[in-house]
Image 1: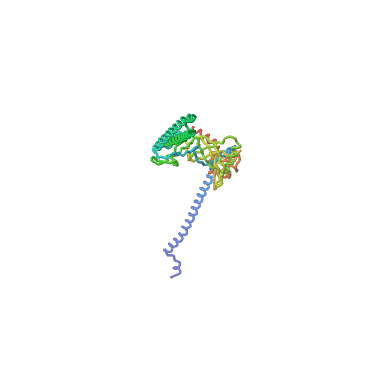
Image 2: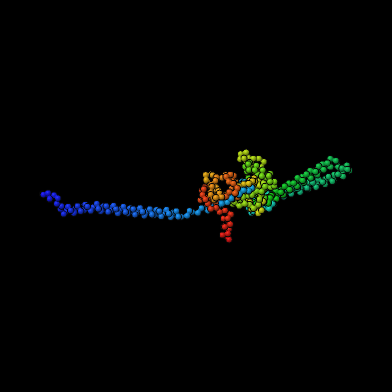
Length: 409
């Protein structure tokens, strides 16, 4: 091979050299296209972010949340206490017979009102009638003996003056007369007693009141120890409650500070208030050392006999007058783990969440012991939507009520 052959380029080599030269050129073009595409994507993304930021900056801030507020009211309010009590008739009479006998009939309607002296039960009276007849016969015999003794005395008296009969005979006749008089009196009393027993076979009510369920049946042998039923006089009706010693002392102080009869309210089992007010009737003589309570009995009028013995009810009474008490609506208070909080709206409409100490309730209001001042506005509706430092749009509770009334008309 010659030196010229070494440097001679074959056709296939020329083609390979051209292809090798084309590959780097293509890669360079691709890299340039990729860089241009990335730059365009980056530019579009930046434009979108900038447009988004500019649109956010252009949106107005949301309006402050609306809340309903009410002022803290200050006034004198009575403090009431409630106690659970049991009703009792002013007279509860157990109906018992005074004689023994078999029950023949019940003459009243159970649960109805019975008048004083009204017949309620009829006992078998045949035995009592026989006793009356026997006592009547004994009385007639005694009266006959008395008449004979009186005849003897009248006969012997003139004869003694004539010395026809001795004085001893006259004395004997006079003694027989007195004995006959005593026998007549005894037999008369026996007859009266049998007549009473006969009358007592008809068992009547000793009082006017509500008759209970009969505890005996027809055919039962009734004795004087048998309770046949109970009649209760329920107008007026009594309510017995046991109150704590501290409540009793407060009630006594309140009564002494405001002379006059203390009015009592009666709250029935369905939550309604009995329309007639009562008053304390008496206080028991001692405090129960085991429970620290004392019995108080209240008296309430009961027209129509609506209330019945054995009912449970609550008695409410004013035990003190709280001077200058601070009042807020109950719905304005939020309780969390035993801590009571309210939202106070300041003059700049900013909310401040405050912890408060609450006292007793007064209607639908809470008495505030500490944490608030008179005149401050508390959030009534919307407390769950606000927090301390937030600006709100307050609407007064009275304005809300007025708007609601206006829309309903």
